Amino acid sequence: MKKSWVKSLCLILLIVIVGLAFLSACNEETESQERKLKILDKNYSSLEELTLAAPFDFNVIDNYMIREFSTDNHKAIDFFSYGGVEAIPFLAMQDSYVMKVEVKKMEQNGSENWAVSVIVGLNSKYGMIMVFETFSPDDEIGAKQTNNIFVKEGDYIKKGDIIGNLIVGDSDSSHVHFNIFDFSNNKWSHVKPEPFFTKEAIEQISSRLESTLKK
Image (cartoon, rainbow, N blue to C red; front, side, top):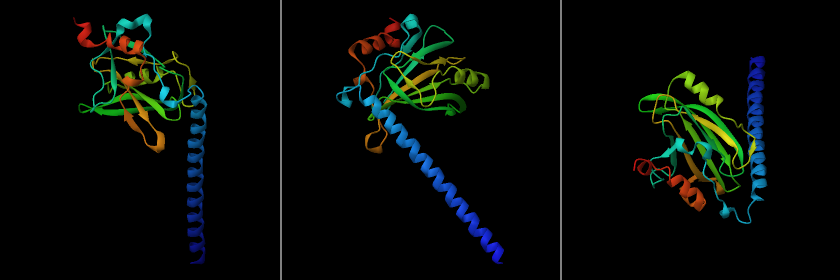
């Protein structure tokens, strides 16, 4: 009976130690990310001065399209392909730090489709998410999309560096979902991205509106 009690106590202690070690590692990772984001703060006299370039490779500008700008219900811009291309590149819109890259499946229209989410910090207040959504359940497409993401967690990237190529596949729904979030005060609040783009960038993005391209 005593041996059983001792074993149970040892098991409980082991679980507690492992749990504390895990929490400590998570806290260290969070603190490390916060330190790295503060390095980017040096680029700004005020964090509100954040500006973004368009994510386009202008050598293939004709391959991009958007259907609409953000709305109150969809605080994001979706970038689609145009002209039947199989892949289109997306570039960093500002100097940033890669916080997370996640390969996942998303439920869309009754199908489990492959996507890759890239989360980057722009400074200690703002970050952005780019989700490369293939709208395809095909494992080959999923693998190809994964291999066409060229950044990894922990990277510092410069404005204009390539983040990845969107693999279009067989669906005209394939797109990169882009939005800005404010993570000050430990909250991740989505905000409309348009105010952060430079005037030139807004003009460049506006030129790729589907309604404009079909005129």
